[in-house]
Length: 423
Image (cartoon, rainbow, N blue to C red; front, side):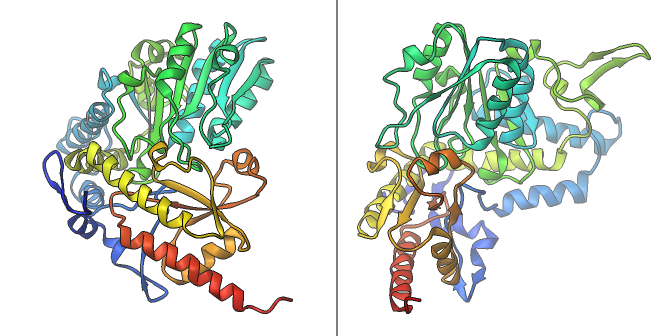
């Protein structure tokens, strides 16, 4: 596959045409054309998404579900159409299973504070993996302490892959929920969610999937995964910041208590009591993030038009090329699977002599944006006996020439530091 020969659902995956849709890619950083390799933190936005936001505020701005005037009806229709688009994108059974939240973190906390709060008791256990984002660790630590329950971890092996050799003993009759990332935001490892779901269901537990790094990049089917809950953020998949999704099985969401109170999540209020609205509104208190929901629908349209199989194929090729080029540098160690077929488009690495923050700063001087730090997965990064790592991550707008720029930038930084006098 070349950078511009994939035929997608309704357009050709033409990398030049795709890049032209992203105004920010024309920016100069320190007199260099921007090379953006930080999509795992947040993706850039195409003009179609930006225009959707602008159009809402210029033409439709009104509250939803409450007005009979034209603007309110249009806003409601756009808001609910976006929900339907998201449901179709992940193959949900019905749109009512899609709950708008602020982000993946809020979606995870919502499940912990509602379903898990009601179902986890003393002596039960919660199972997560050793490669989770802080947002999928801390809520479970807090709940386990509150409920006097046990928090268990599925370890990662020396290759950065999930070790499921002891799955049957770790997930047992006292397990109530398994919460696992679909793709590690540090290692790029893709976890066997369907296998975890099968084991969870065999003991009567549910499975919650953090899909923040998978939904934007590969075809994700909640029914094929056999998930019970799945969450992701719009800003990592071409959409705006400040809006995310919690998908859940209808029968689970229906019996869960509300997470917040007020606004359209209420059906009826008296001075003595209140009753709750139907799904999905029971979990959407107050005026919702209307504009960003509509823009998320535009992001889904963009990805659907490209075809998620093609998005994934493009990234797999980029990742394979990047792994080959980065591993050719003797001074660099890549964390996680060395086989690019076992990972997504996220590569975290450590330089033998240059601190990640110094490397990131030096690359920025060359117009190259990467991530440095612990990537909100401090226990995982520290398990490699380091406190920080550099991370490059790829998306639909990245090219092999940008990977070459990264590798050349690392080499140039090495040369710079080799010339620096030792104090």
